[in-house]
Image 1 (tube, rainbow, N blue to C red):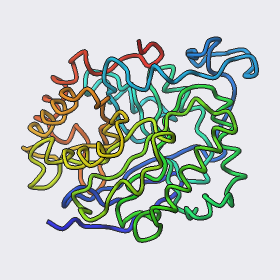
Image 2 (cartoon, one colour):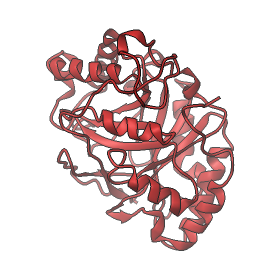
Image 3 (tube, one colour):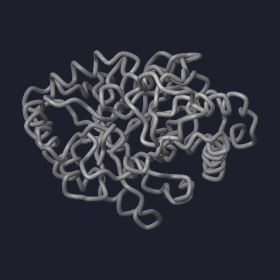
Length: 347
């Protein structure tokens, strides 16, 4: 079935829409704090950081070492929930619903928003890593690559460095789809890679080594003729390969049906750890089976380090609460100790 591809719009405190796997269409939500707090009251005395409480001045603390977080022994149990991590109340509600607290919290920020250091600290104090999906709606990739947005970019990198807590950044996801303003209709693979590398290099020059970089294409089924390799910035610029894909539509009958082809294509050019950066399943009687496929697929692949459930009601009701049988299955499988750990002590 041909996927519906809507035009995506956003405000800096609102939701965005997107085209997704097969016939699925949804919108993603997110906000960042405009002019967000980039305060230094976080990190710890050692290279692995602290609990987000008061610390010595940043000049006396070594940069946070993200290495233990790149491929931990247990899986990330992630969630994208409206209002988090600026407020952790939605995460607490999600934890009560699922029986387990997420240790990876995803939020969405537009290019031009301030860095939400308060949100990152909030999540860290709760034992969770923050994943920011950074969306350049009003910044052409060619301009970013050419350094025309460097005043903002350098300020952002400085704020991330100052916080000195680990944060995952996913820049311009779903670039292989035509629905994005940075996607196939608006930018070439060369422009995309150049923008990504320029952002990464700017953070490196600022000393913001506390970033985990996640490159995240949409699963390939809706765009079978778009190759992923030309969009890949290179292993020196990527820590995780994230996948955006949903158990949606009549063909999404197994984990392999949703993600298999994409994973096989990616493995031709990168062996980086894989994260299901955004996923969910259609509500209704098939959700329980989809949840089983999701957990089994992640458990069964050592290279898959976890998943993020998109718990929003947008174009479809992806919230776990929308399907009681699916929620019961999710709670049962989430109880497995292989999912979830305190990111402040990942070993």
